[in-house]
Every structure is written in structure tokens, then in C-alpha cells.
Image (cartoon, rainbow, N blue to C red; front, side):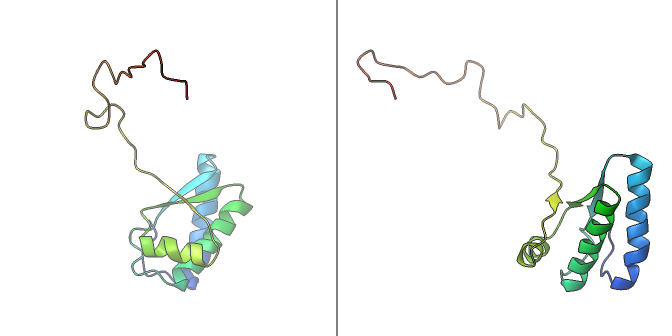
Length: 114
């Protein structure tokens, strides 16, 4: 979790943590929980950009968890793109699936094909 507000002074420690996690897991991805960053600002953007750079230099990347819409907009505004972790969806939830038997289309013999 990236606690907020973040400052540039924390970059060396956080970057070392990113590199260590990439080496330890070998997964190539570090999920950075940014829900606690607070009001987005250029300091947060700077820290995230430096963490992404550290991850890329170590052969990985950063994925953001829970970014505030304002933080996402600010990242786009300054030209940075981060993948955002999507919550898991459970397949087959009754409100999302069709009932058994599905929808049947009736085709009339004299209708031309689309």
C-alpha cells in the first residue's frame, strides 16, 4: 500500500521495495494499492512514475489498485499510463446470465439474410 501523502524523499525506499518484490516473486508485476494516497497531486504522480521506472528497469511493471478517478485523470493528463487492477468477477451470477434455454430467434423463410 502506498500511504499518502507521498513525497519524493520516499522514492529510494519505495523503489528498493519494488525491486525486491519483483526479484522475490519473479512474477514481473507489483500491485501498488493507491487507495490511501489521498488527494492526487503532482507529488503522487512523480512517485508513481519513478516506481514504474524502477519496476521497468528490474524487468517488471506496476499495476495500480484502487486509484481515485482524479488520480487516473491526472496520470492521463501528464501522459503516463498504468494498468489498473480490475476486481474479480464471479461467473454465472444469476443477474448476469440468461436463463436456461437462452433467447431464440425466429427466422421467417421469406426474410433475406443480414
